[in-house]
Amino acid sequence: MTTTAEAAREGTAGPYALSHLDALESEAVHIFREVAG
Image 1 (tube, rainbow, N blue to C red):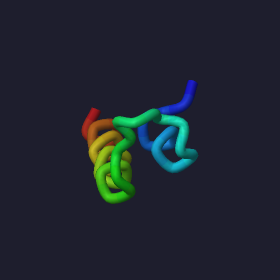
Image 2 (image 1 turned 90 degrees about the horizontal axis):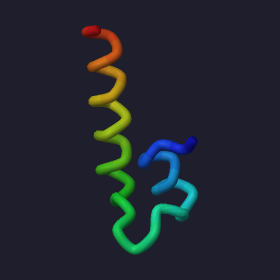
Image 3 (image 1 turned 45 degrees about the horizontal axis):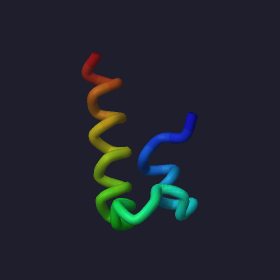
Image 4 (image 1 turned 180 degrees about the vertical axis):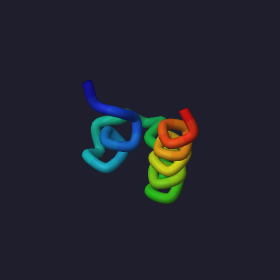
């Protein structure tokens, strides 16, 4: 299963793909949540 950020980087997320910066932000928030958990 690909994450939204991976799909955005690969260009397979469809017409509603996140911008590159949004994808990076999403990855960072995911990592912060894992560390905090």
